[in-house]
Length: 51
Image (tube, rainbow, N blue to C red; front, side):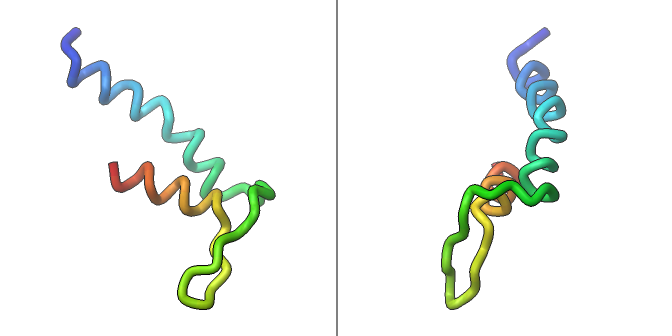
């Protein structure tokens, strides 16, 4: 198995982890961006989706 396939499999396996960050009310705190309170767990999930 070559490196691109390994990376793809790892990303597929991490999907449930980042869905947990996005959907579960995990109390990591919040960040104020442009006057809105955004949970840090949502930021973690969005950053992973952009990768």
